Image (cartoon, rainbow, N blue to C red; front, side, top):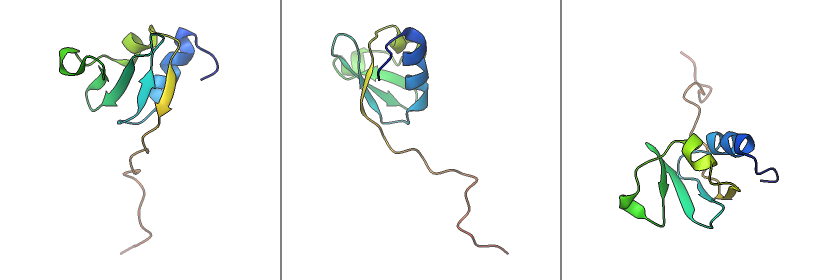
Length: 80
C-alpha cells in the first residue's frame, strides 16, 4: 500500500477478503476472520477489532490477500 494515511488504510482493510493478513506499523500481523481482525501475535487474547480500529496502526501492509468468496448471484449458466 503506497499511501499510509488512516483513510487509505481503512479503505484497504475494508477491501480485503476474510483470511487476508496485514502487517501494522509495529510489524505485528493481523488476520481478518468472520468476526473481524485478530492479532496473530496475541492470538486468542486479542478481541476481534473492526477495520477502523486496525487502521490507526498505520502504515498497513497487506501481506496475504485471500481469494474473494464466490458471488452468490453468479449462476453457472444453467437455466430452467
